[in-house]
Amino acid sequence: MKVVERTVHSLNELIGHVSGVGRPPLIQAGPARVRELLDEAVAAVGLTAAANGGVRLTVAYDGDDTVHVDRVQLGRVLTNLLTNAREAIAGPGEILLAAAVEGDGQGGTRLVLSVRDSGSGMTPEFIRDSLFRPFATTKASGLGIGLVQSRGIVEAHGGSILVDSRPGRGTVFEIRVPAGEPAADADEAAAAVEEDRG
Image 1 (cartoon, rainbow, N blue to C red):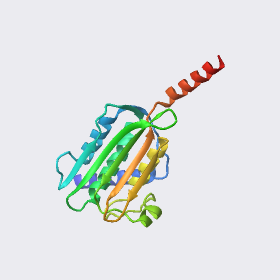
Image 2 (spheres, rainbow, N blue to C red):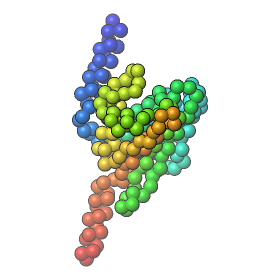
Image 3 (cartoon, rainbow, N blue to C red):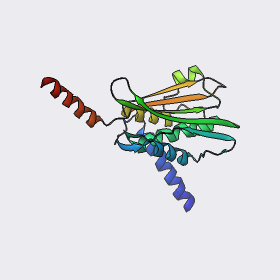
Image 4 (tube, rainbow, N blue to C red):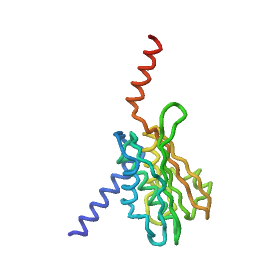
């Protein structure tokens, strides 16, 4: 009976994932500490700073920033990227998870997250033609929808996701999302306009 329950649960999860493809995600942004976002993603994937099956994870972030993002949804993106990075490494290797909060060049701030791995890499053709297409995957198991959903989440934040990869040279994914509170930015802009009028 437990086998049947597990199978039904897995099928329900699969249906949920597939039915969500192509639908814009609902973003519920709020204050989130960058350090906690990173720690939760690392814990969710089961990676630790210590060696994990010959794979060494390094987290490059020493700040104490709070950003205004959907912590749950952005956590899903990081979890997906870390899982992909781990699965791309066949033997000993390295993963670098980095974060920074920086100016966006327009008076605001943005959160920059990157996941770099020393795995097998991808061809330019696969990146161009298949990487962000539903059900396209290089993995023996997997649906090929994780990156599609990840890009949707990042774009729903008003951000972008970039990839740099070469066969045999690993992969880097970089995410950039606005880090400030939109309402606060709008209030400041309105106040500045009023000041100019006065």
